[in-house]
Image 1 (cartoon, rainbow, N blue to C red):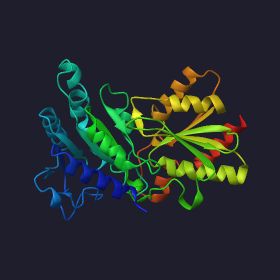
Image 2 (tube, one colour):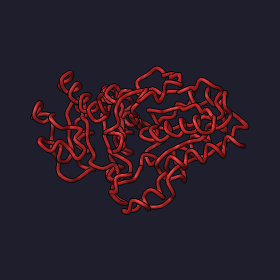
Image 3 (cartoon, helix red, strand yellow):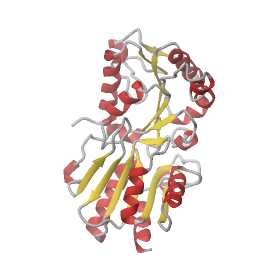
Length: 331
């Protein structure tokens, strides 16, 4: 059974075999190291002229990728840790995302910026954050997040083929997750619906009438999946799960359809709670569907600690989701 890491590596290999315009660039991505999380392992051996190692300058990496994209190439830039996306903000927000608008639709910037994100590996406050919310709502920039339910390879290939810039967020713990919709029979009681398009959303509908909807993305789906099964087995509370691949721009129609059935929304994210993805999704839902009940589960508004006990206390866990779902279901 393939894991997410293998599917991402396959996507890069397939894209480079299929299109000579695809280049990879980033820090320490050459063999035998193959990148900090090994997503690019083996590619510099197969494509030595199109896998480029760079200095430690994230702004320069994305700036060079932007220039390559403007000249007709399709670069994929790897940022070693998502925390360092702050150093790329000018190139992403003020350049890649704006050029199509600034130059009257005469140019495209088909650049993909890959960034390992998230905590739970003890890397401390500057290597464990989930900062994707900082880039949501930037006009012209798409934010895409793979999960273990859809195929990460298809998602990454779609991002590389996209004519607009894509920020591709990969949670570190997701790399080793196996690809399966029914690991050990976990999801056999759910009907899975998938939207059309390059970056699909998935709705998991239980066999029984759901009491609430849980919206999530990326690795959070692993926690939400476990929470839904615990609620079903221990409390006989059935939930609907809406799993997003594209965070920005927002397309919340699958969520609205689910909320019309349940009337209660729980959002789950690993970023900090204030002004986050869950806050915006909740606001959109309340504006669209008056009278729904809403709860949010997210990280505490604190830097992530080095010690595991403190890290676990700061980041949202399985029991946080179960407790919030029980409270919401009782309202």
